[in-house]
Image (cartoon, rainbow, N blue to C red; front, side):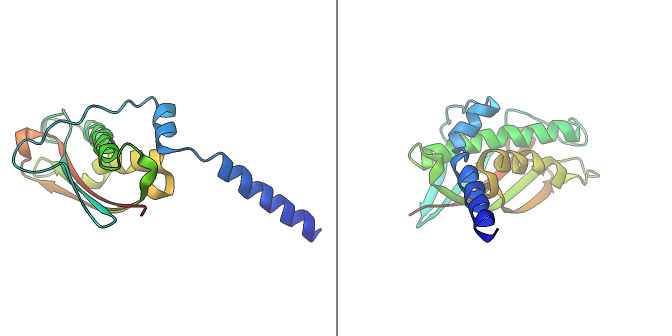
Length: 168
């Protein structure tokens, strides 16, 4: 009986390991095409690697306005998800085209351009966080701050900064 349980456990672990998808495979399954990354808007870089950490500059979507006034929370969620797709594109460039080099997401700062009385910032930034877990699994889970701000550059709905750890 003990041998049978051990065999079942080994087969279970092997089948889960062999079915693991790369981030690129998961993107394809989700029907997500990564955009071309644009040049920075000013005198800065899109990312900076220090040791095994990659720090991304803030990214935002092509969705404009204040959540809670011009945009619904659901539209804010979609803006954060769209920003996540752009961030994945930057990460792909930063990792030399191989998203599998990402060991883990470490920290995320999500800023929501929001109406003064709007308090659903975490639900908006969930659009980003949910996508990272969909694409990267457990590696996509992260520490996070989600805050409301009075304004963002060019009136974008959200801006998100990310720190990831990469494999040696």
